[in-house]
Image (tube, rainbow, N blue to C red):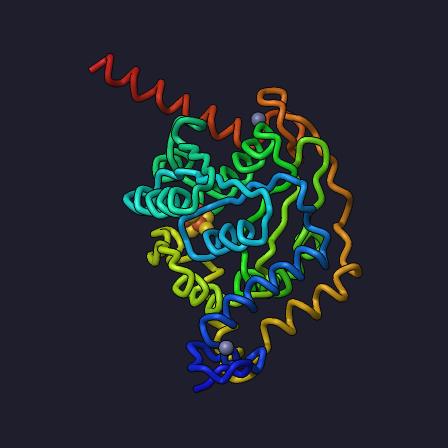
Length: 309
Ligand code: Q46
Ligand code: ZN
Ligand code: ZN
């Protein structure tokens, strides 16, 4: 198999793009697609400060690498979620990457901010892990970006993630979510702008980019991901992609063209949490503060029981 561009040995075949690429041209393609996506969606300017949400996985580390190589001012934030040994291992990969590139990484332990890590929170609040984790991540990432004076928060969502989210939203006709599914979510008040520069790159090419660029990343999945609906949706899309190359890209690009037709049922009014001052969609304490309160109550209950024993 030869590179479509230079005829040297190719390491990857991208059927959806009709390309076979050698390491050099794969790197060039990934960086070009990211640069074009940033420009097309006016994600940020070279002067702005970017905070990359880093998980230790291939997508976020590749994103950080590309932004740094393109000359953007990008720091990273790693939320230590407190998920078994998985969190400790993914933190090591994130720290090693930052160290090797001389980049700044903020490490924020969720346990310090909330009083409990995700594993403990799941037991206390008895909710679905990914729903609880999503609330905590959204809140803390926004707060860290805001308090650090960053203009924009960048996440490593790739084409496979976006297509799966889109399919999930379409299957349930979630008009509100469809209206908000876009590579850029503008900032508003204390909500920092969010961007997803990797949405037009597939998981496979990002993994190959990491290998070629010497980026070491965590292969294992979060233990809570096993039963997630998104895994099933990705599987279905992979079957379709196999038979009809380009399905995911066409699905996402087509949606972005007609997306304006979806309007949220009613505009979401932002309130500010009386406890922490951060934005929330409901009146009264935000969901993060309510979870924090619950964790604190549980800690008191346990200490009370211990004292009585
Ligand atoms: S980290 Fe958190 Fe994910 Fe683990 S608990 Fe679910 S949401 S799967 S990206
Ligand atoms: Zn080549
Ligand atoms: Zn709050």
